[in-house]
Length: 480
Image (cartoon, rainbow, N blue to C red):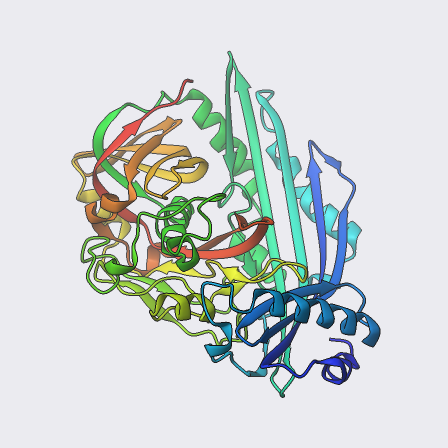
């Protein structure tokens, strides 16, 4: 953070019950090569700070990109006016909440700094792999991309709290699209929609498996083009980690956000089928289901040391052996609900107030190998790579589609099928979990694009999971 920021903030901080400043500076570079043509780089830099004031029970926020002492004073004055206007008119007495005064530092792991490569070298890396997709005239589109971000944050309280955090994010992607006879199919490498995203540096490209993947994704697109449409009916479903990511996100993560349960998102992103009286007793899933909130897993996309209200991050079980234990709620929501939560109050930028968000939400590995999961299926389908999703406004009824499917018959993998889809109800779906893969099936995924809040905030989430088997699921094919 700027050297003078802490000094200037404390010089202008008003005499109130609590005052904090959150500074964020973020720089991003997005490079894409599509159909062998390098697209113009997308570059962005954003910097600013938000002042939070709690006084006489009221709460106020004000953001500024003017980080001079005068700019900070003006923001603090606006936050104080809002706090005084809200005093006595809010759903909770903010003055009664013990806000953290943290101290410390946090940094993403970084084994191979992307800055060591010039922009031309990065384009050449992408172009070299994307060019390997051109194996057949039916491949009509192909692209490779690399998105790198560096974020510096500081959280200061007027009475001495001080945390600095630095995050390095890397998101690679590679895909190919095939077309013939009115049918179009796309195959993505390691997750569509930037689903393979982690904290770290260029070492992530090795985990992604960029080298040698161009031809493989093109062959995958052609395989889907020739495949039959997914059949319909009730059957077992074996979801691989790049689809489990979406299943966790939509039907565990969003329903467990405490501010949503309290009604804050009702008029925008919807409510939740989960109610406060369920915690401690509700059977969310089978006994095989163990779900953790874990922002301490260093390479995962939403790892951090402290959330945006200064609460220290720690690993917590949300669901243990299928029973619902705690929600995704930060310090303020916990005080409102009178229930323990986690350190997940997060904002997408310096000019947004933090709200309850997912961070790293993971399913813990079980004991079954992939071969054992497959062997336990008489009739079913393995699905990979989410491509579509729909869920109702209580995060209960859902319908998801995948890029790739493979039938399983009498415990053996059979033919590949295209356009596999399935639907279910969150409140009962997880109880049909009959097999959880071991560590050999476990993968770290995530998404940069989780939207929520008014005004809207698009935030990073991490989701790690093994392969998981579900019984009696309604499966159906697409139009092609």
